[in-house]
Amino acid sequence: MSMEAILQPWPWYVTGPLIALVMFLLIWFGREFGMSANLRTMCAMSGAGKKAKFFDYNWKEQKWNLVVVLGAIIGGFIAVFYLSKPIDIDLAADTVAALQSFGWDNIGDSLVPGEIYSADAVMSFKGIAVLVLGGFFVGFGARYAGGCTSGHAISGLSNLQLPSLVAVIGFFIGGLIMTHFILPLIFG
Image (cartoon, rainbow, N blue to C red; front, side):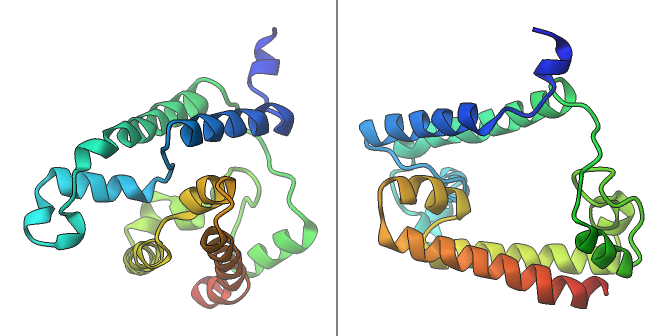
């Protein structure tokens, strides 16, 4: 297999069954997947249960899920630095025009826009305000919904849980509102 073939994104017919296999194994062993649950576990490990009842539980039963976080970090590092190559993103003309109206340059040259994710953008007042407010809303939403997008969309839907379907629909509606209304207010 050539290096060029390795650096291509995996097709859906490989990754989809792999996700299904992982979900089958989690269901088989009576486990549920979700990334936001790991924050609760880390807080409980550090003694937050003494201050808040929410964190007062047997976190040792959830240690296995911390391996998921470690795997995501290591896997992300390997994918970015060893299994990918810089690519231009083929965006729709309307999307490019909308982003250019914000004054953004080099649209589609990277997976994340420098106007939001560069060190200068993050350390600006607007960047810090967006991070703090966005972090609050994501944390509040994950707690209010009883889990994060990965937990509901992957694990909850695999278990045919109606609350997860409602949460996923809410996530998509929130994403559309952010994309079409809030992002233009922040950067337009």
